[in-house]
Image (cartoon, rainbow, N blue to C red; front, top):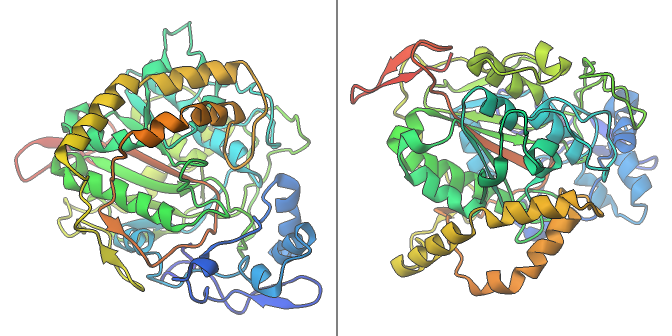
Length: 477
């Protein structure tokens, strides 16, 4: 995804893999504007045994593993495992990475699948499990619970299936503290209304999940990656359009895992988060590198070369707001907030829209949310249904059942299917301000998107920064 950007430890044509018969070098993806080129099918494997095979012989097993798992694939299909996007071909992601901060040593927390890495991102551990699906026995405290205990607000916005519900305290709450997450889950299209509201009403931490099954925009093969690029542009544009919110926010664009695509950097060792080991992996090694982009008007353009994994975000939040513990890995993680190079003052140069470069890139000017009446109908319907999906989902997951890969909880998919007819009849809100036709290709796991406010109590964990209107906000320290 970011291998072709200048200044990063990116792709190199000098490095290659072999399937036993042919060599495959890292080369730019050809005809990346063509849907046939950007679709990767069949899906590269990224379960823990597959990833460990891919990392053998100095990361020399990516193509061989793909050929082993999918022996009928052609040379062209196998080359896609090694290819990368040239600079500018993914306009939203590349523009934000070059305008703000990109971390080119950000590794997945585990050489394994989506669930395991998502659990590390939200809680610092997967309780010894690397196999998907698995029983829902993730009773460790989550970042959401720790924020509640510290008096901080949070929300989760989901495209169709909220994977945060894997965590027990997100399904049933926590009776000892009185934590009830039932009103903290909202459909993703409602994020626009939150971003358009007052800065003081924006939660301290917002977790955005893409759609995985219903109109998927999660960048997971074989889904069309252009939808993920649109989502990045939409979220950025909504934050950027609200000047007061923009000045006090950080947007993080992050992938769970590498999705089976090649990288030449061997993952280093890691501290096990706890003593749990259910599936035979010791959790003593990080996973393959994934894209990590930090967007804020208080950041200089930079490539940060510190070693991070998903628990580095938890470490930063723990330090910033003095949260409770989130496992041994989080305790020793590098604080990413402290590692980023801050701008001396509020930047006024960031674009109001991600740079639009590449083949057939264009701005949608005639599709601005349909009509006022339709927006009002959607808003009224959404307010009625705000907590309904999350409440039903918690009930479905609590009841158990089969769980599918590609970040889809089987029970919740069935729930959404039951509502499909109603959803088809309801007008859909268009958040898109940019349609980026310089299309993307999947190079990592399902994307996580987070936005949280940098602001806190005056004087805590940051310098005071004076904005142009005289209001004071916490800095990015």
